[in-house]
Amino acid sequence: MEVEDVSGERIGRVILVQVGAAMDGGSGPSHEGRHVPNLPSDLAERLLRMGYIKIADTRYFRRDFRYYVTTDQVLSVQASVVRLNGFFRDLITAFD
Image 1: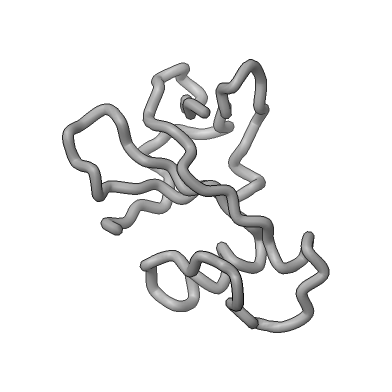
Image 2: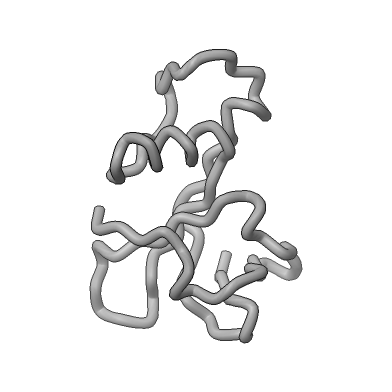
């Protein structure tokens, strides 16, 4: 799926959807079977708890540049496009 920010700029494509611990009935910090983001531990824990979408930036030739979007940053999903409620520059970024 393609991803665009609130301005309509296409920023990349979804490469992973991770359901949060609160949604899958998880009661503890177990990461078994989950993709743990390559981020500082407090930020990674927050993403695992809330759930997130991992986006590959397709605007540039950097295959290792990623964005992480929490579920509350998603405005809508329609016709294979995820629309965000903010700008891409405000997203969590990482090199994976």
